[in-house]
Length: 155
Image 1 (cartoon, rainbow, N blue to C red):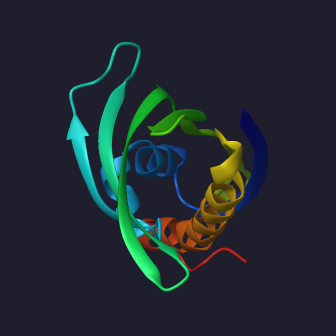
Image 2 (cartoon, rainbow, N blue to C red):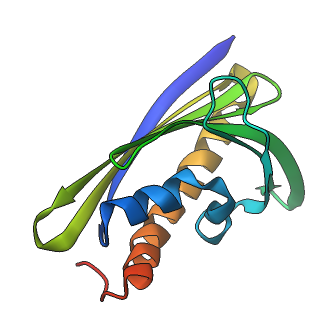
Image 3 (cartoon, helix red, strand yellow):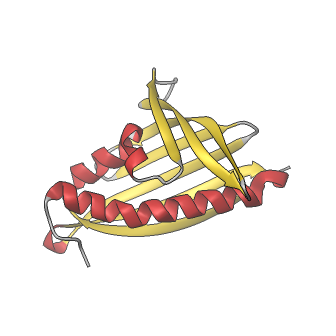
């Protein structure tokens, strides 16, 4: 039996919309932001995907550390919307729906909704790991975009 749940977050950065979209849609650049990623390799795009990747994460379960690998596809990559889906065995998917919009004073607002689906025995661990990793990514994202744009961090 599969379980599913969603969490979301928002980030503001002082940058161009296309800069934010470029960073978020190129998963080879996620290693600098995502605390679990240790390796990203670009693959030939799967049918229906704009880009495909093989990604390796380093996870922890108590004192144990282990690596896991999965494939991720960028399905939509526009300046105002990015959709990615990551798939890992057994029957685990993470869908990331990101919306971007320009705001006054040169700010970009990034709204992210993450939906994780996993087998019931793995769900709690997988969801907890995904939420912690993506919230850590959120804290790094604004600063990375501000630095790339050469601006002071947005308050």
